[in-house]
Image (cartoon, rainbow, N blue to C red; front, side):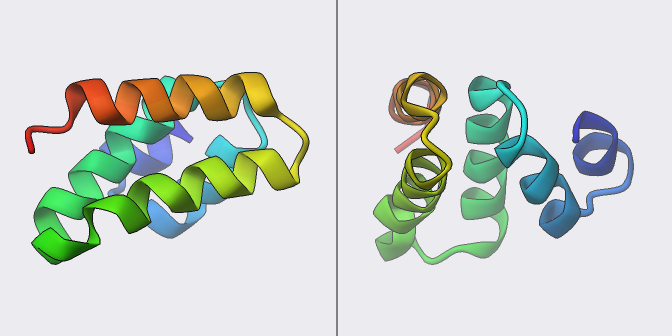
Length: 77
C-alpha cells in the first residue's frame, strides 16, 4: 500500500491494500493528501468517514479508531 501510494500515486489501489492492513495511520495520511489535492473543502468529513466506515464494515474497530484519530489530528484544517 505504501509503495502504491508514495511511489506510484495510485490512490485507488493503495486504498484497497490499506483497508486490508492494520496501517490506519498511513491510510489517514493518504486520505489527507487526497483531500488537500483533489477534494473540495466541504468534503473534509467525507474523506474521514469513508475510511472509518470501511474499516468498521471489515470489523476492524481498532484500526478505524487509529485512522480517525490520525485524520483529525494531522489534517491541516
